[in-house]
Each structure stands twice: as structure tokens, then as C-alpha cells.
Amino acid sequence: MTAPAAEAHSVVAADGRASAGRSLVMFVFNDCRRDARVLREANSLAGAGWRVTIMARPSDLNATQTETERVGATTIVRVPVPGAWRSWWLAFRNPVRARGFLSTQVKAALTKGPSGWFRLVRVGLLGLVGLPFLALRLLISLPGRLRGQGPPPGGSLVDWLFRWRFSTLAWARAAGDVAPEALVYHGHDLTGLPAARRAWERHGGHLVYDSHEIFLSSGSNADRPRLVRWWFARLERRWAADAAALVTVNQSLAQVLGSALHAREVIVLHNTPSRWNPPVHPEDLLRAAAGLAPATPVALYHGSFTIHRGIEELAEALLQPGMAAVHAVLLGYGQLRPTLVALASEPRFGGRLHVLDAVSPDELPAWVATADVGVLPIRRSTQNHWLSTPNKLFEALAVGVPVVASDFPEMRRIVVDDPLGPLGVLCDPDDPASIARGILAIVEADPAARADLRSRCLRAAHERWNWETEVARLIDLYGRLASAPPPGPASGTTA
Image (tube, rainbow, N blue to C red):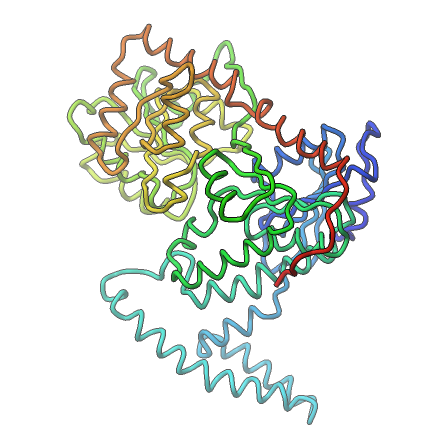
């Protein structure tokens, strides 16, 4: 449904607590349908009396209509990503494949007479430059293709830069321009920050930067040339320069990002779920879905199927001595799913590696609770991974499931250093034997010790690692922003 942003701004909480002075707009460059952190923050702040609008984008990147949706007390406005550039860029990358589009452009230009000459020149130049560019790309990629390698994750550097300039930043301008006036503009990650800053430059108020990770050390971003990452780090500092506060996910990231961005104030908000109480008669969901007997030891990996998460190492751990009775269940989604399905079918695993489809966030706790141990052997491929606190860590503890986790600083702080710890076992994520030893230390413990460990995990989650405890810091920040005078003029502008 099409709706102007102003309509979203006019929504007031049903109990009347929100006022014109307590309104905020969040910006996130996804469709905000499954982003648990963003939705939890928004709903918690709405519950604290704030009028909340989330500016997101449609699921379909080719959509042209603005969508609006009401989720609880929050309004989500999905602003289309400007896409006029997309067809021309695809034609430049591969004029042969885009010959239908180019032919249409030529016909349209010819029907306009002299006024269409510029378009004809543009099509001609695109062909003259695009064909050699295509030949060069094929030549560069030939060695990799001969070795059976596909394109790099996230595409080539040129593709990545074009997406940033003409997709991410184009959406940031569009979303920032139609965002309603508010007291606080809250940008999620580096992709949402420029949109929040643009709206802040237009309307004033307060700017908040919510960095869920070290963005330039995450995923394919970490593989970009050092000069490119230096330039984007410079942009990040400029866009965040006037932020009243930096919000991030753990102490280590708070230190790294707070120092790099010269943050005025840093708020740590761990990605913890809400407190959860196990049902009296739980259903054995994982074993039923995998076709396993009730007493089968289950080691669970859940979440995104992507590289460097230690999923392959977990599979190899099944082949270690003493692991013959253990089954590993992979519950999730992502680009590696076909590879993992093929891996699970290999005879050497004897049918003990299972790949299951992801379940909804609301259903997830009941599924995770039926595992014997949660395994998160994330690898030290980037600084972001080294300092991470994966959501699956807190999701396991929340339902009383002990973990086998990488021996990294933040995970050690939670798994070993917690007052009720240890809440599991630390491992070397690059060593399947180390992962196997961690799993066996839990599944082979006597029943009383295992029950005590699960009880400690659930108690630690109820006392510390829960959303109700964490979000109090965010609500306190917003309470102070509500009574603080807005800052002076902007010290820089968005791209």
C-alpha cells in the first residue's frame, strides 16, 4: 500500500503517552521483517512512550511503491530503492546480455527525433566502453573459472562500489528526504547511518548511530582493498561525527568503535532475547524433524549458513573419536545451504549430519531448547568475528542450552567469566578435535551435572543476559535525549 511518510509520523500510541516531543525515526537498509534487534529496540522504545517510525526498504529491490505496515506500536515505512541506474549498469557490465534493453533505448531515441540524440550517444558510448570492459572482466576471471571458483562474495569491487553509490546511498537520500520530523534519528549500521544523518540535517534534533558490528570488517566488506576500506572508515567518522551516542553490541566493539569514531557516549546493548520459561511438557522438535530417537545426543548449529561460521568444522567433528553417537543438526538458511545438503549426504557421516529449514523467530526458542548443546565455532577470519557475540550464543543460553563456543574475548567473558559460569566449553574453532572434545564434555556428563549446567544457563539468562535488562540502558539514553537541547549546526553532509 502506498503511504506518505507524514502519515506514519501522525500515528500516536493508543494509550496517548507519546507526544510530539518524544518521536524517533529509525533507518535500516533491509525490509525489517526479521531484524530482531531493530524490532526489539523499536517496540521497547514505543513501550516507553516514544512514537516510533522505521524507515526500511521493500523486500523486492525493483519495487516502486512505498509500503507502510503497522507492527505493534511501531510504523514501518518501506521506501523503494531508486532503480533507474540498475538497467544501465547491467547493460554496461554485459552489453551482449542487455541487448534487448539497449535495442529498446535506441528505438525510443529514434522516435523522438533530435531530442533523442543524446540517448543515442549514451547507448553508443555504453557499447564502446562496455564491450571492452566485458572482455577484460572475462579475462581476469578466467583463471578462477578454470579452477572452478565463482565470483567473490559480494561481487567485484566495481559492483560493490556501484551498489553503494547508486543503491545504498540513493536509498539513504530518498529515505532521509521523506522521513518525518522527529526528536531523534537513529541509524542502524553503516548502511542506515547516512539516511539518519540526512534526515537530521534537514530537521535537527539528535542523531544516534547503532553499529551492530564492525561493518568494514564484516562479510565481503572485509575483503575490499585497504584504500577503499580507509575511505569508507573516513565516511563513517564524518557521518557519525555529530551523533549524541554510539550504540553497539558488546564491550570490545564499544572500545574499538568508540575510539575510532571519537564517540561522545557509548551504550552497550547486547543482542539478547527476552526472558523465556520452558514449557512443562516440551515437544522434542529437533529430533522429530530430523527423524531421531528421543535419547539421541544433538549438537545444534542454528542461524546463517555462510562462510567462516565453523559449520564445516562442526561436520568434521562428527568423525572424531567418541562422537559416533552424536548427531549434528544445522537449522537455518543462507548461501551455503546447497553445499551443506550435499555434505550431509556423504556416506562418511553415516546420516548423522542433518540440514533443516529455518523457523520463525517466535518459534526458535522452543526448537533450540531441545538440543543438548549449541555449537558456535565461528572462525577468526576478521576482527569482527574475533570480537563478536553471535545472537545464537544468547539464544542458546536463553533456553538453558549450554554452548561450545570459540575461545574469543567476548565469548570467554560470557561463557567462562559469568558469575554462574562456566556456561559451556570454549574451543579452537579451526580444530574439529577441539570442537568434538567440547561437545563430548557436555553430552557425556552425568545427568545431574548436565541438569545443573542447563539450570545455570537459564538462570544466567534470567539474571543478566536478557533483553529486559539490556534495553534499560537504551531507554535511559532516550530519556536523557528527550530533555537535552539539540546540538548546533551539522559539521558535515552526507554523500
